[in-house]
Length: 555
Image 1 (tube, rainbow, N blue to C red):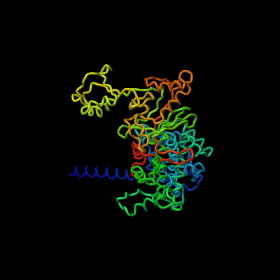
Image 2: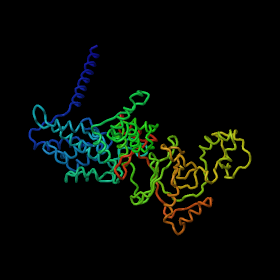
Image 3: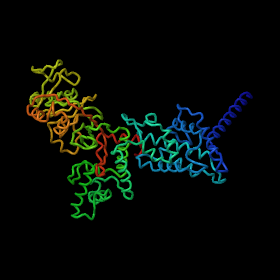
Image 4: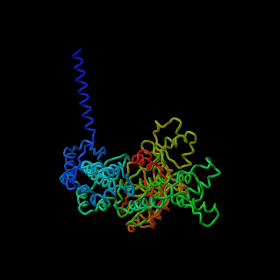
């Protein structure tokens, strides 16, 4: 019994000592300093104690905030012998004040201030003097210093390389991918008090990125004192719908009360302005897509601009002087030469369930009067069910059936014998005006098997929603693109030869003298030459995926 009591007493004692130890560990250390001239020495010693045992395999935490760039932060302080970088004798230096304000205004960069410890730093700096003794709290000063340094490095990495993995669009720390000596940049920025300049020098250097950044700041300023929510449907309250629509369009500066005309005319004009900004058909009517766009709040607009600023950090701007650029959400192809728009054209892209892939490649040749080799999935899922009902479909659509050796099958086929899992044929559409690829195909190497081409259904280019294909990009102004691609080959393949080949209606390969890079990308916001902001439909929900990764809950 006594032995049991001794064991119980021993266990209780250990528990008390352990809990006491836990409490002591959870207590925030306090180092109060009387004289300002002593603050730097004490802060340096505290920084040294925190960083001397830096371990790159562990998450580094300062005052319950995890550091982004613990390796860079450690290297920075080792180089400066752990002396504080942002304060002197307990007061923020000019570079320190500059960095604090940069973090405070992170939204100007499409970033989130609290991702750079803003609230924590603000609290530490506001309480750096003990309220009762009026002495300096060296612990808070040293912690604020470390967090400011980490904030600089994180900000630098984020504005330069972005916050997401380019392919998966999930969070990724890209510190090792920073193409610069970050510690050296920071030392020079502190020495010369050029914090903003240092950060700005790391940003993407293209006009599209800078234009979106300016548009974001302009949008926030312009709508600082106005707001709007989603527009409820007519069914919710049909009697007040027109009034609610008018207020919604007034809030976004599309509807103007003092404009000439009747209420109906003014409303139609307002809707057309709204449609123009959203790349929709400007018919002044509340169609499905227009009404859907009206559901978006002011916060949604801000987030859409921010997401596209982030995209420019993830994808490098084409370095070539001449390239073809396809923007999926805008349903548009552009040809750029020496920063000048040479031509643009409507395009049709893949449906949401047959997405056109994002890629970079090079157009090396074009094919006049191409065959269409029907992809296996389309053959068994779409064409085979038709053939089981109507074998004349092949004749009407100019299809040939090929066996495994590529020979045309001329004998009768009982299509009911075949299925998605057993289909030993290939289907090919003969060349001609009614070929699904049209009369011209532009080829570029890619693992997805997609290409640019003409189409036999030009009427579809008039639709405002042009996500209609199986993944390839259909081009409205295919002749204009062809002329541009062959213009430097006036000796071997002059323009009149091209025109003659179109009249012959015979298949011909035309290899380009100068292959041209092609980029297929995804941007749902852009700014034109007149600094007007345009927003496009997030047709593949890529914005939505990025928003969830960047803002998590309640984006």
